[in-house]
Length: 235
Image: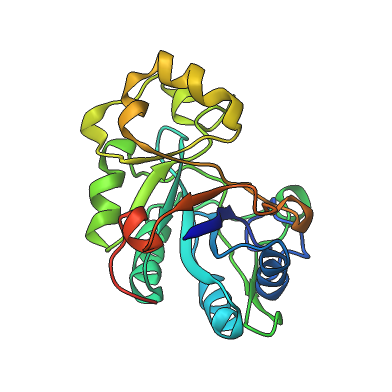
């Protein structure tokens, strides 16, 4: 079966996310675009994942809770979970490792928490764009301990990626998945970084606006998408 996916999506909780990126709007756009799987991955937070999963109950797609973690090296790593409980436990863990710097909505944008009806229920006070105290060296095993899987985000981008900030991959980091923003970069990346040859490659939108959500152009052929990702259990 072809699983058309977009596993890197930001809601209005991300300060750089558009206000129209509500759980229902994201899900409806994903369905209209023919996706079979979508993940909500706000910066350093899973607090809109409860609404996302609740709103997805009547939608014909697999909705995954997740987060785009910023490591202490300011590298972005997407973290996905098979169920809400582990995701929210990870959310609490990460929140405790954010610097105590409050958001400035007038500068960075609001960080809006929503319910399944797209109603505002609050705002995250800490600035979610900051780096946590979690190193990339510990992310894989840390996320696995919460039942999830992690992969370096948009490695071919010129900022906040493992290659832009560190310049290399290390096998001891343990990643088996990797996200490449532009598929045309993949062959060159594999030549320059042979470790990528043994990794599964994902192409996601990193959408902050509804019109940027993937239009079904990327898919994997498999019988069990959760197993392909390395996740176990059911939502």
